[in-house]
Image 1 (cartoon, rainbow, N blue to C red):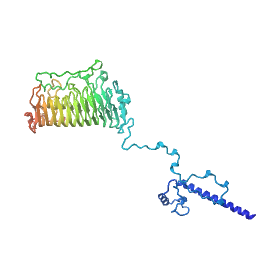
Image 2 (image 1 turned 45 degrees about the vertical axis):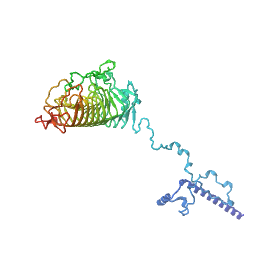
Image 3 (image 1 turned 135 degrees about the vertical axis):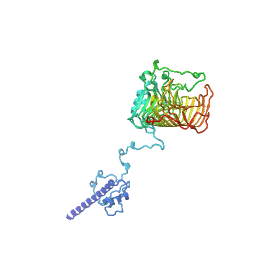
Image 4 (image 1 turned 135 degrees about the horizontal axis):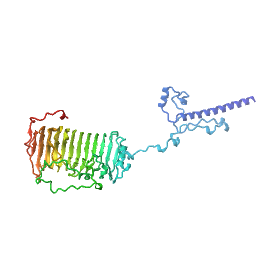
Length: 558
């Protein structure tokens, strides 16, 4: 009896040992699945070895070079089954619920919520940029379209407020773009697009048409400009659009100021025959426009200004003006107004420096390019001028003021049917100086006076003689050719302060032989030299320096 109990006790011990061993294998398999879901490699093993960390169940037998299991295998090593003869009773088999998951579940077995399909990036086709987002252009700049701010663009509705709102938004964003779209006509009243707190490098993209109102009430008692950009850095106006000043509503009340009848004498003492009178249009409601005429587009106190591609037409007065600006570029630009539209300068510069004007076509009723006091380092080339009064420096020194202009180059210019070619004009009584001026490669066709220096400039029938003048020196004319209708050149310098260092090289000017008498070259108190023979011969130029002239004082220095 005692032996039977002993044998039964031994049998139970064996059953417990087998059950314990089976449970230990299952636990080891669970630890493998928990700690080695990714395939192990020697780098991980060496990392553990360097850190002195115990390497877990794979080295429990001291044989670090062998792996008892392959954790990267998709099927785990099954537990060791007990011998058939010693199988435990069915009631001792552990329930399936406690069996751990397979030890090496692949990553795809993870729940779908951990990798939703919407997070998968979508690749764009190679070399194809995604389309610009709404409110951005292809370069990523923020775009503010005036239509989005309420502009109608029908040519009759007042769109001024929409332009003001678009500017207010663009002003806050660097390198933003105000878009004036094509195929619209925007009626816009006087606006000042002003800084100085606006961000830099704003672009005004003009592809549509902007027209000025012809209602006198829109202008109050009179304004000096219609569209104005002030105190900005890096401002650009570009596009294929048009700015139309509706100037005919103003011109009928404006006298012609640049009167050169004293220099131009027709054969019969009258104006040209067969010249059609200007076709004026009335302002809205038949009312008279203010006496002060606005410039169409003005820039004031700005740096790095660019105007390109656009056309300005029919301005009441100047078309494009730069005042107190530095770093100006104008190119591929057009001005279009009738030749008899009064005082409608194409491009007007004043107190501006580092200016480049090139590759443009200008037709107007006054100077194609007008360079006023305070200008230096001005470069004008590849310009077609006509109709108009030519390219002028001045008038300078009006009302006994001081004027300073220096380092001006005008070259590769075509002038056709203009009053003057290249001209310097100063008022009597002025102070200051003009120096360092180069006119070269100038082609004239049917120009009344191709070369002019006039220190007795007067926009009235008579002006008072005065004893001071703006000093002129270092004026060079080179390679100027073509046809004239009145006089090839007119040099009228001051008695008190004659012109000095005037040079002529390769001058070839021939008469057109039309309605006017042909006059010989005229010189008065002009000192300089001929570097080559001229056509026609210039015999009036004085050689050397003036024997006596007014001594320049501090008030004359620039």
